[in-house]
Image (cartoon, rainbow, N blue to C red; front, side, top):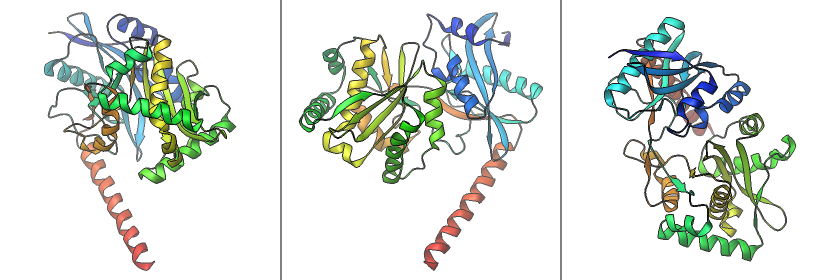
Length: 346
């Protein structure tokens, strides 16, 4: 079996996937503009060949974690032929050899795989997912989308529509808003983070996603009669597929069941534009029980979840992942000790 990695342009990558499989936006040309706004460069796009036939395509970007360089192929590789444990392992082996030859500063590669293997390690400081909820909107109509959902989902949507109408709330699309106007959206994200116990990205991350990919990024929200913004979805659309990439809501949104109404309204709007699916991005699985709570909300939107390839870290420099993991563990131990001292002194 002869295998080889061949460098591609973004257009060649698009053509290779055309008619075979939708190309995830993170592996497509528009994503490069967003990565550039975050100071990250494209390391390369490649086709992986076996016996002179393309089997998979992959785009990798250069990242850094505590000064350690690594490559990340978000939602890549994209398989053009059916993947197997052997083909996944062979692609990784070829990729590691090429990276070692081209850039000795790269410590590891973060990429996706379906089959577990000894060379795959859980991602550092990152929660992946290997199962997701995709709303089937290929039918294009509101009633047919409802029919694809669970009974609980249909009930939730009807209840939300009634609450929205009774409270005078409305779903709006505000794609193309100004940087100044986006501040209102970020305030909603900050409230969400305080309530749910996570650290939001800096506002520039969300804004750059909107600004750098104007043909792919959409922004939808729910406003009350006084124009107060109570929840929003930032959706990326590419290759007739949509991904609800970021979302946020205030406590006030619950008074009109805004999140339920918003997600359904977005699905219907996109369906009318010919989009085939709306991916809600990640639910729980045996590998990722941390997503159980958020998955309980998402499971109402589809009759069954969809398995996807989860992310893994693949070592390039021997021992680099272990050393980095140890350094991060030490850092967290020190931070926890300092926090306990502050609580005691307080």
